[in-house]
Length: 427
Image 1: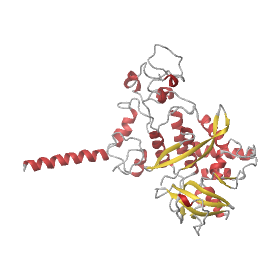
Image 2 (image 1 turned 30 degrees about the vertical axis):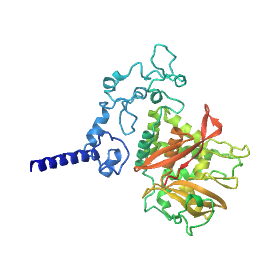
Image 3 (image 1 turned 45 degrees about the vertical axis):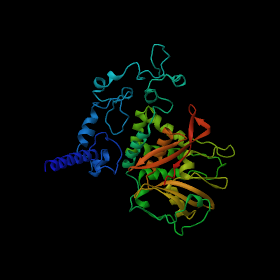
Image 4 (image 1 turned 135 degrees about the horizontal axis):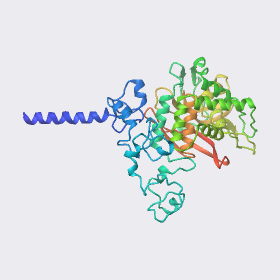
């Protein structure tokens, strides 16, 4: 009887310990929504009323102290920070100096980035240390390059979850209805077979969505391009103003855009909002040549508007442009080759279609998101992972964005324009 009681007690204690790992915010503050846990630990939980019981104690109150947080990675959810960059950006918690500075010494790059070589130092923090294999262990985290401090995959996933929650202008299930129809394997995407008898877009509430400032600004810019490469693009003063308005509405006038800037500012990529906006304008709207040496293309035109090059569709990774062309009878939807795991918007589709007779074998797009969300995740991925795959997380599910740099010309001090960016098939 005593043995049975003891076993029952042990099982109860074990169950409580296991349950606590699933319903506690210990080590989880600011991370994205994860359905594997019984409660959540980010700002979205306050909205959806599913916070863990210790959320406010561990994630809100403790977020203003550096106790147990020294040298932590950047987390945009925290009101103050406890890593070696916080002094530079004037956003340290009040007790940072007392709790964390003792750990900073001659083996750290804190305050030493770009210093001249000193043989007395056990490790170094200048651009040659990688070549000589004598960098301090925190060199890559602290010392900035042209793209700012290193941005980790974990930070990209955490920030993208935040942007996902902040996308208040995305379409709801009642505002947007699609009809994907035929699903084909990758081996059949080149067949140019029209396997869907109906349009992809069944219904869109234009009155609600297109009246919103970010959608209106996006639509004004979208129709400013010639789709054929080799034809020089030129913009009137009105069209240049429309570009500025789009950047202002999406990146400065939305919480989502401001969150993106705050993260990049803290990472040392930009020193001010004006620098942030100007660089986005250059990388997205700056013209370069894809054909015949004409200034005929840009990142924005290629990704959002789409182009025709070599007798086929090039770029074209935006759902709103797809909807508009399909509505006008200029685009014929054939099939889709992949569909993301999301049950609501935004979702991801890999699309096969013909645009006025020109075929697109796989035009992947994030469906139902706001223009600012599309623009933000592509910008984030291009800045953090230029020419590489960028791993994000939306609602606990992975989204991979492939980016490409345009290497034939540059702007500013050798910066590369966006060549392309789009969701990658992973299902």
